[in-house]
Length: 127
Image (cartoon, rainbow, N blue to C red; front, side, top):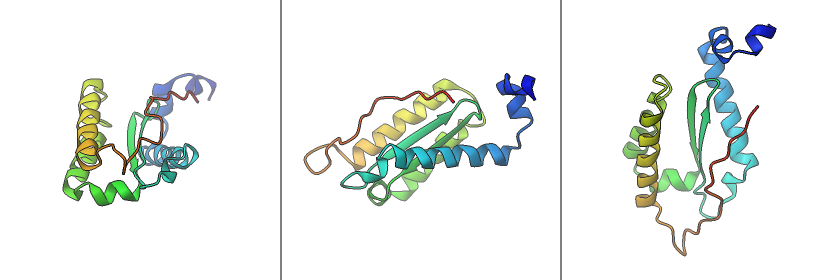
């Protein structure tokens, strides 16, 4: 157990994929609420959660985003982000995030009706 706890590869090997997916979803949902992303005026909070241990990406969006962004475009972007789960390619992830940014900028342009209420800084959390 001690050796496995010191190696991310061994931890991944001995943890079922469903468990890893569930852990990432649960952590992302908790952060979404803890960081106040669910409390924006227009309900336009978005969280892109990347877990290096599980090699998983999870994206959560508030209701305002899901009503403003066309569903087919949103679903395609989410699928593209989730595809990076199977290929640990940082360039693919960066490209998918750039497309997500463009999609959100098009559907929810910043302005008086949609002020930037939250920090856009990338946060690294080591657990």
